[in-house]
Length: 104
Image (tube, rainbow, N blue to C red):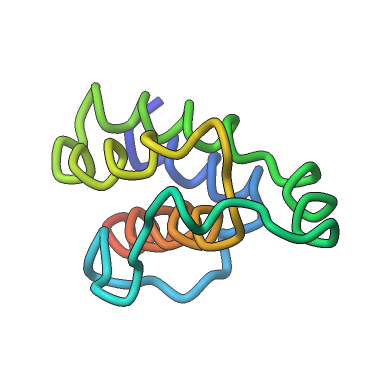
């Protein structure tokens, strides 16, 4: 399986195949900090349904084997794995959209 095929499969699994592609792996509007963790019960409930670590594992695989351009942003996202908020999830989806743009 080629990297493009792998990324397409990951995008399909996480329902991001039709997401709008973008051209930067990290955008300046993402200000990830430990202060944006899950605060409300609604956000806690929402984040328990998010496959964050599963997507993260796939990003690590892509990064290690052929996508060193995402290594910085994957490292930034990894810092907050223990207490994730919606912004962290949005950044992870942003990275998937970036990968989609590189395979399109």
